[in-house]
Length: 311
Image 1 (cartoon, helix red, strand yellow):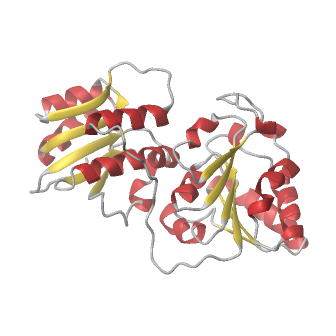
Image 2 (cartoon, one colour):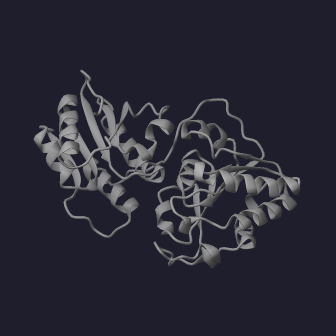
């Protein structure tokens, strides 16, 4: 059951896509909604896999984040309906094509409901979220700024993050190429390499560390840490280089110059963030889901793209 209950006026944003990256993509739009209706408490309803509670805990624009229950069908509908009714939302912003959330909001007597529509279209999620937000807020001049707040007094060090994780093997760069890239970087300047991934990348991180330590390149890993603890390590880095994964989006939203390796997902996915630069095989602009070209991205090509910013 979703915990709820408040006596203040509330508005709700429903963001039902599951990943960290998805939440980062929608974050600039959510923050603009919060600014527009600053006299309301802004709540977000999202999925647990977004980890929104972990990396948005210092954002004063967002009052509360709720996770959808691990339920399905009628039981899920009932839980959502009860949650919306209890919180007495004045407005609901549904960042999704959805029959379910619209009609549940309607049944819960939400006064004003904003949503994409009922039937999904083939379009960029960045384009749709920003276009809809401008229409909802009646402001075509909105400037969307992705930003994650963190603890004060965290200092930058000579560290580069390698984002070795990914939601699928097809999105991952070969770990041998990370080793090659680290060698090229080390010849220009010595950095600590921070290896960022999930529990499934722990063995890969150990392998990379062993190889790099033998070359006298220092490494550290956050693959075993919780997302809320990873932020303090990520923000120390000067550059992120790695797969199209949650750590790329987190780094970009932390203000870190981030290079995403796109060989199997559309580089447009990073277009919401001026800190993220897409590296595709030989600069190709035709990469999309299922392109299967991560192996076409060479270590020396990546180094050429980043070398002028290593200082």
